[in-house]
Image (tube, rainbow, N blue to C red; front, side, top):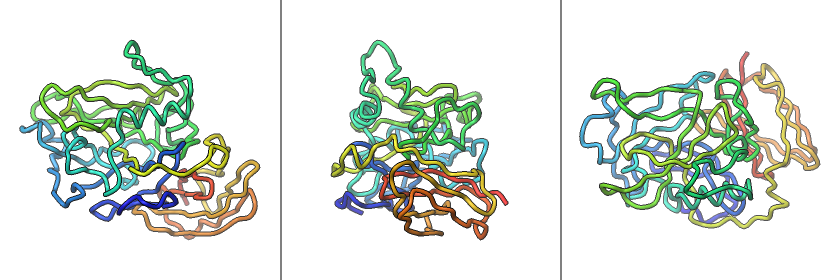
Length: 312
């Protein structure tokens, strides 16, 4: 799928997985983690599995399913872990017209959210506040400091796979405590310095780090085409509330000052299970017919997405 329409609300990968699309500044980002098993030319990626993650050759592109963190049983929203050779492969792991978010892409987004962000090489701390704007508010371990998900980025604390306690198993820890994303760009070669961006449950920070190419992290893709947008129309500080959350039979969505417009609710496999239009700044929605689980709510007119939990 070519990212030629800057108004597209979703994008699909080679496997047919559907991802919601959000606007941050003049960038279009996927609002959930990549979970493809193929490059966009159809070439398969090796599924190493976390029990065998450290089998050679580590320099080959590979992925594995993430271990489910606390507070969810909804595996579809977690995405997969990929090593850097997969993230940097020239065959492109993202959908056609998209690319793995590069170091420059991340900086542009963080600097838009926090104009005082720091990209000096002295400190790994890039912003003390932007991480909270990116973190999902449900699927992290408490206290999840600073989490507002005001951008709709919906970062989930699936941690990463790294190190090795006993060969050949990969070591996974800290599910629910942190999230780590590869910065794409150059194809991997021995000695390449690989960067990532990390979020933590005890901080509202976002940090820029270097890491071993063989470790497995999440991936977010960015559209090749710049979005046509205005700060006024896509203000990430628009306050949206959804309550109660978790919900049983009804959920109320409200926003300040602006009408909600179109409302879409997606289930865990990207199928729309509810759609409506609202000319008001609040909407009471009957969710009693939905099964238990995590759902994605998209407000495309406000360029916002967030998750709700249904628990009967």
